[in-house]
Length: 329
Image (cartoon, rainbow, N blue to C red; front, side):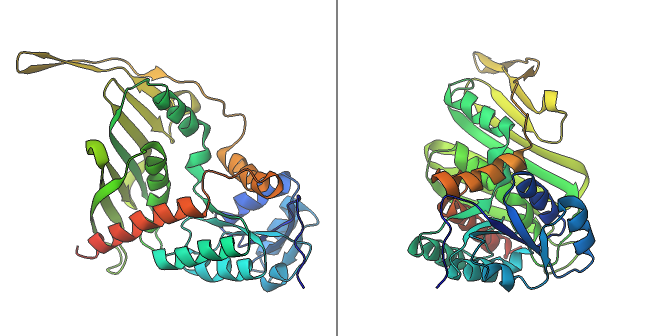
């Protein structure tokens, strides 16, 4: 019988590649990382250099069978997420999985149901929900700084990183979808998506998704691997102003409030422009560490995070509907 260790987080990491090494560093710093599994033997030395005496295991199933480990973090390619999350839940492990939860909605529903059935935590790595700039943005909007939300647009653009197993929509857009759904407390009533495949015919490397919510609130998400420079920007347009979260800007300019005005002289609109006003926020900890702490806190104190399984399903639902629309292009 597998024992479940309660009120303590002992974590095993599965996957220590491009993003996994950052998760390894943070969970190690937080004192809860017990073992790391990766197929690449060359990773072993890097792990030892960063973590000292953390166990390195090539067979991830040894982590799942370890009774002293009660939670796993999965940072492997998206196409493996469903299989690995399902296995971990069967072994009675709490799970943190990098975005997306998996690559189709029905599989996602099965994973969420299994986590509930086994009374386990299932958290998805929608990192930007934990960014202090986004948290401050939401607080300002809720306090009425820009009035009611009218429109949101989000750009996530770069030259690469190209993938083969999932397209740019599934790789980039989960961040933007999660933020937009978190900000708009209205029902999504319609969706459309456009895109193209220019590097590999079977993989979309650019896409534009348009969302329509109740009360005539709209949003669009533009993601691309074929952009000359990096741009990560969330713009919220309200009835009384605008807020911009520019993640690639320096910390002092990441979050700006624009108090633009539009007045009418008869039938002529008159625009009064304002300089962007910096909105301060606390960046004492990197967002990834805040996210990792949220997973630990859920295990130890039962404080539900912003990106639980149900939130992951909402994001998957948008992704799957957008994928269906994209298939026509």
